[in-house]
View 1 (tube, rainbow, N blue to C red):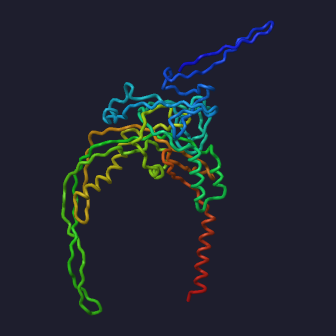
View 2 (view 1 turned 90 degrees about the horizontal axis):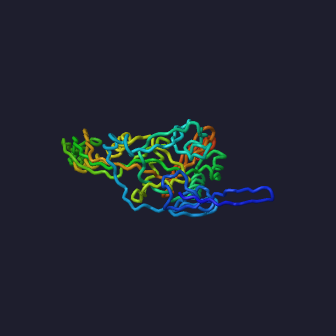
Length: 388
């Protein structure tokens, strides 16, 4: 980055003072794309990425700087190569992180921040826990499209729809600082699969049987199944099997934020991260592929059942080999609210691209008890007036 300085001369009869005023003049051609901070060319404040645009915006004076999107393909990386050789060369990057003592989430923290809250559980982060780790570099991301105001409105709408919410819970909907923007690490995997299987094919047929009803012999048509042993093999290709590389969010909630528009992945640029936090992955490349296998398995079994045919199918044995495995390490955007209510952490998450929401919530048991009592009272009244 290019900086120029201005000099101001203040002079009295006996004293001459020279004041150096730093003026930040930003030249994109001379800037370092890997710098930790993007500085406003007008007031020297840190610029922040503005969701829904391709611009960095100054939160103080409103100055905008357009992010130049690189015209390059997002390549699939060789899985086996990274498992064997990623510990050398430029395959990894050194990342400064801070760990939460409460939930274990590992996130990045700006160097000028001396205290912060964990976005996943709301616990106070201790800066002395900061450390560095080697991570596979992300090569792509999906920038935020949904703004914090839109995410907060989704939060408010969600809270208003909650039945049996404890008194005082909805006050959190008015606290904008409870919403944090996070880039969450994901793996995507491509793989060829070859599966051998054994099973059974069931074909339905009808037959007539006789039975006795009140001493009278009758006939009826019944459906039965004829089972035949089968075996075979099937080849399938899987594209972009998505696996979250975080352990900080409930799996059942984060999965429901899908689908993600992975066709719009953008080459990684740190400028998109400006103003947001980033979680580093805690599920490694190999462990992530083990999860991908689990996600592939139901689709393999469905394809086998279609191949078996018939009216019913059973897969009694299955062995799958995986080949030509490639992957991408990417960052996907979510808005998250982590708040404590009566010493328990609850989370509300929003897909930063689509606005789709998922959340955890507390229950007010005395409200539920009153409803149960009311229902039992209503049944008692009905029985009293209309019962035998």
